[in-house]
Amino acid sequence: MTTRQESAAPLPLEAPVRRVVLLEDRAQVVRSGIVELATGSHRLRISGVTPLAADRTLTARLPEKVRLDETRMCRRWRIGTAEQPPDAAAVEAEVIRLKSLLDDQRDSMQALSQQRALLDQAVCLYVDNVNQVLPYASDYQARWETELEALQQQRRQLDQGWHQQEQQRDDIKRQLAAAELKRRVDHRPDHVLEADCEISVTASEPGRCAIEVEYTVPCALWRPIHRATLRHGKVAFECEAAVWQATGEDWSDVDLKFSTARPTQRSEPPTLVDDLVRVRRKQEKKVSVRVREEKIATTGEGAAADEGLPGVDDGGETRLLDAAVRTTVVADGQMRRVAISAFEVDGEIDRVCCSELAPLVHLRSRQVNAGRHPILAGPVDIVRESGYVGRSEIGFVAVGERFALGWGSEDGLRVRRERREKRDTTMLTGKQVITRTVELFLSNLDDQPAAFELQERIPVSEIDKVKVALEAKECAPAAAADDQGILRWPIKLPPLGTQQVKLVFTITASSDVQGL
Image 1 (cartoon, rainbow, N blue to C red):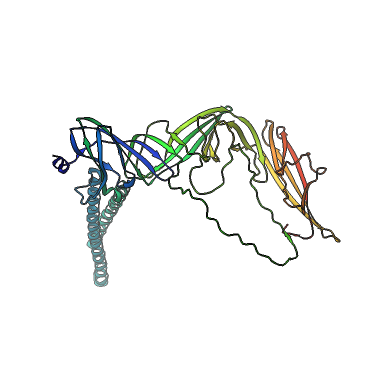
Image 2: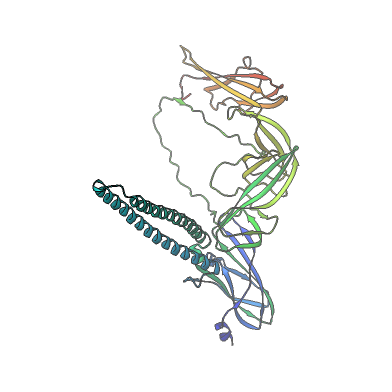
């Protein structure tokens, strides 16, 4: 009895995609369905499964009264136009029809071209005949003009027919290009390869059985993307997921989850190598220095993470985020934005200018992450009351942590920066002294007063032979540098007002220092 049931045709099982967990470079797909089973062994088939499913990850979950015997993927090639789905056959038939019309159109135009050539030859022969007869004719024959005009009339009719045929040919070419594009986009080669999931089970008693199948597929990924909106001093922050998938199966009205797990990441200790110590002769020391940009390592303010391998920065802890609504994602490889969560908080609004990086005054807000989960690192679309401003970037922000956002520059404020440098070397000791002067010219072009924070910086020395000193007496207004060499001035400009800021500092180095 078992052999007869197993050799019979498998029972169809309607098990659409219910849940999808998206990882950094793959997706875990869960299908579920209910089937009526009698006592004994059965073979169930789930049709429409993507052929990209990894066989090793295929698992099935059954109730206790049903035993799982085997799960496998069955793939087959679909050959022939008649076996293609109806939409594919219709598109293919349209392409064949348009190509046939195009061939007929080319034949008609070729025939018209031959008629035009013959008519031109007839006109030339007629004119040559008239030229030969005219010197010996007693008078001018009126029929010559009439017959020549008739030939020209036929030529104009052929030209008109040629232009009409040319327009029809161009229209058919456009329709053919659109049909071929649809065939390439909607019916890729992976659609020809079909796959089914077959499950062999044994039921101990008859009844309805709920079956859940899970497998992993490539060609699917997600990345965090955000949108920030500033209105009336409040910041609305929306966390979303940018989803791409070209797995060959559509996910219709599914429960999406987004995971930061890295299943392919290897966890092995580093390989230890020998550190050889060598002895060499003492040499005359020359200190070689260079100026480098150093990022200030701080926490908070939502600073963007260092550039590295593309992926999802989750702060070192694997997280699983749920989509806000059930979503449909078509397997066309196009990006879709899926909402995850959102929150709205009051922002501390101010203006700041880092003139060394950009001569602009930026609107800045500082707020707290009031969401239920951390903000993952990613791009942020910036929107103000006037509309879309641009795109920024944010790093990992924990729950309750403060972070900053830039909202574009203020058009009414202008900053011009000028930098001068003077080098001196003492005659006896060879000590090097470099004096640098930075002048900033600030202007307010609006009819309203403006206040912002101006930031400048001076180098910070890491060796004793190079010293950096701020010339406080020559700086106007007075300011002091912090441990990172950052100077800050609170600026208040009246309507249509101006102000000048001057910064002077010296770099003193010994004679054996090179590279300044």
